[in-house]
Image (cartoon, rainbow over all chains, first blue to last red):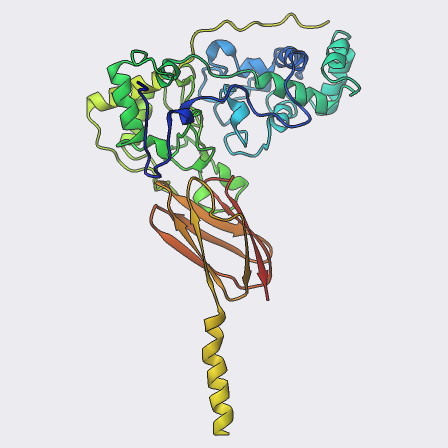
Length: 321
Length: 104
């Protein structure tokens, strides 16, 4: 007997909505192939593609730290502390919009952003020159994108292809959805009921990726000037301080939490929502104080921990010379 | 003269009757229609049937509006003021899009 049949207010739900599609979506001109993913893996781990040759994509999106960095906010070129936390790239391939504020419309577009910004601090013209100057990349590009030159376009496409292979898999929750009733502890099962019910988490954290791909002000207090979030790109009042709903996949691996990394633990995050947020300016009406017992709070955390993928080994490539 | 006044009064009263109200619901993070044809003076009533908030807006050159966030069971209405093409979205859920062609 299948353990998970959840009925939302909309009346539309089945166990399949909690199951990740087998493959991530990709644009017509950049389907994932083994050659593209391996090229992208090399580029992703290559620190030579930064101003001082010391920072790669993986410096912030570290697979040993849930493809994030374990820091409240990212640290970029010259140890500059940046304004927002590093989001995991797990399942980022399913996001219609990238970045906390959604300003990038695809993985390909996002992949180039950090090179020319405060992270790698390498102008895209110089990025192209450096990749072109490393002889070992030539055959890899020829295999991955035959007939196409080594440019920022193919660099971005390769990194995006690699990122499309970084997917959640084998979490206890997935096993439970697949029919293994013993895969979740009683606490996690109770937590799931709270998650989609009384605690209202599923108002935003929906579907297999636990995100509505939407933008909400959830009442997080910034330590300095308030971060405008999505409002910088959508001049709609409710978008002041609104950020993209992050996936909860592998959430136990990606502390600290929220757009500014203000909470070290999942327990602290739950307490934030129990309080109904810290700040009320432009607060989403989805956020309201919750009356949860200590056991219920613990159950929610137990459920979120059940979204952790099975342990896996990530291979770091020998970089082309 | 009395006859002329009566005609004007009839026209004046009859004109609003031609303004239609177009009901567009939001369910499953989608508008009930992707495109809509309307006329200047018509209204669109947006009704939220989802168990979470929406925020319908348009920043189109022809007309901009922000209906704010509204919850399940609530509606917001906008009057179409000028002819042209309106691109309507939900600020919370950017994948929700509606194109309204407004004729004179």
